[in-house]
Length: 165
Image (cartoon, rainbow, N blue to C red; front, top):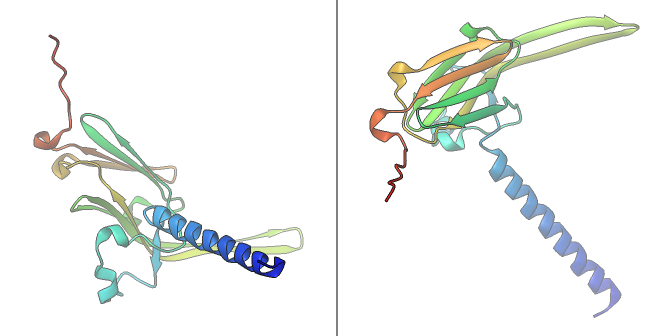
């Protein structure tokens, strides 16, 4: 095999690894991405895909899920919003947080005019590890962090009892 063929083969292998890595990253990050759309009323057939596939896009609302014997606690970072901007619901085995973000700030720093803005509808879908009792759910929003506490449904609580012999 000539040196040129070896170089080409090496480049093809490297490119294949990059593509595989990108696909893996996309699959792993799809649950962490938030989808921004033009407005709440824009519903198309593509928007009705399975919930686990709906969190794609480039806007990110970080989320943490805590699971213990009696409850699931989900924390979602949603800075710059008010509690009235957020719509929270449980659909199937997912916590769905959606809303409309409309933020614009302008400031001057020295000779620079800085304009920051973020707007559009968003939706963050968080898979729930167990069945929850939505009637006893509680949510709070403070300092840009949404905290949703979801008690587990009594008949579905995962608890392993250990017998002593």
